[in-house]
Length: 169
Image (cartoon, rainbow, N blue to C red; front, side):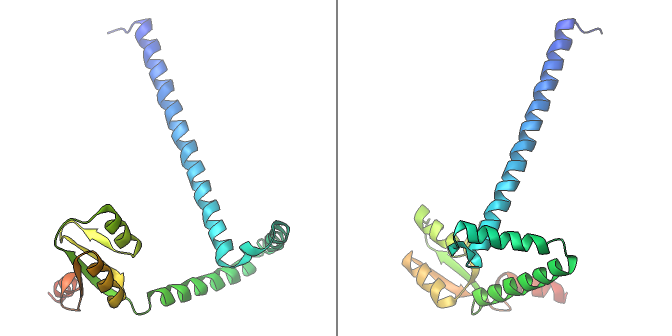
């Protein structure tokens, strides 16, 4: 069945519109990736304590780093140093934390759920409780402040126990 000229023009315009939308999505994704990378770089500058430098000094320091960036051995040394620092900070941050479950008798306010998420907890819709890694005393205080209770997750209870039991079979 032959299509009319008007139908072919309409199909062509629709095709052009789809291409334009796809191009706009790609540009948006590229912008978001760049923005994320810039934010990450800024956070790293702050984390190192260099954000306190004035702009000229910070720029000069970064320019001196640029000269070493072409040296593969230097970049590997920097990567190892950074990896060790990240590991050390993660261990310090998680020291004394253990798996904790928080239970509440009723629904929580938006402020309470925001507080729980900021403390590193997430809600399990299946189990209907909040779970996360935390210092037990802090988690218990947080739960009580919102009318709930906290309990430790032992090696034979909760999700860890289920995976241990499955591994034993």
